[in-house]
Image (cartoon, one colour):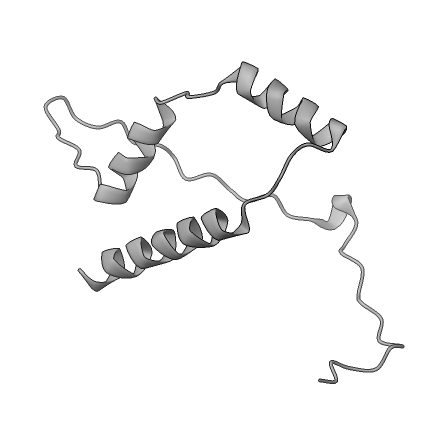
Length: 95
């Protein structure tokens, strides 16, 4: 597939002094007693931020295995998880 000639040049962005900064809209505080409803996606993001599951010992063990050449990639497990994730996304979009 041909994308274009190799001698094509790309225009440089304008200098910083010529750029216009976006103007911020004045913020309006919500009135007392106002309710806010989050979408399911926003709720999932909020829930995911609170998990904080990080195992430093496991990371160190994997790093050592990689540097020593003992780490083996299980391509079948990765493929299975990618397919499961894709199926989950497709099912979520169908709803």
